[in-house]
Picture 1 (cartoon, rainbow, N blue to C red):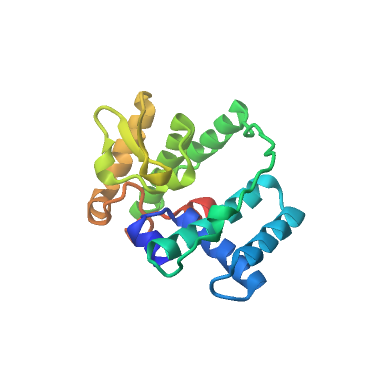
Picture 2: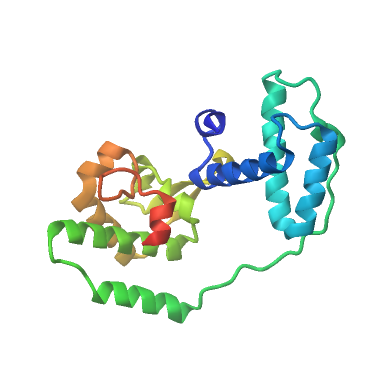
Amino acid sequence: MEYCKFRKELDWNTLKAYRIDLKQFFEYVREDIPDKAAVEAYITELHKKYKPKTIKRKIASVRTYYSYLEENEIIQSNPFRKIKVKFKEISLLPRIIPREEIEKLLNYMYINENRKSEKAYKFWLRDVAMIEIFFATGARVYEISNIKAECVNLNSGLIKIMGKGGKERYIQVVTPEILEILKKYYMYNCKEIKKSGFFFINSRGTRYYPIRIYVT
């Protein structure tokens, strides 16, 4: 897990999934380095319990573990080189949030502007800015959480997003009202943002992690 976090620089959600999947794998096989037969039996068990998309992810976690063992010369033979897994995965279209619901949420947030204290206002600005970015760009939760301060150009509205596998892309915020919210949020939180290095921060002035965004 340390290798995945520090060397491969995987995001928090991926690390969490790896930890869960590997724990499940070892609870099933009950040995440190199971052979091909044990891995095959585990994969068969997965097919009995889960849908294709989940099976694919869990197998990928175990495959990554064996690749690590092989790269570090802990094992001589990787059983996954002799295991072929094929199954038909059903493609599901993502659920689209109706425009009316988006407008209702944003209107509610703006109506309930929190100016009870400077601290409350700072985090009201953060929440509004974050939601506006979600709907304006279609970025994922972990991508929003991972936006670095240096990747946001508040003058042009250009934001660099780091996706899975370190892939980067640029998104453009063109709505003046959204840019104004982002500028106001930055103005009230610039000291903490510069210190943490991340654009969206929590009450302690550090990165606003995905799990906290979900709770919010």
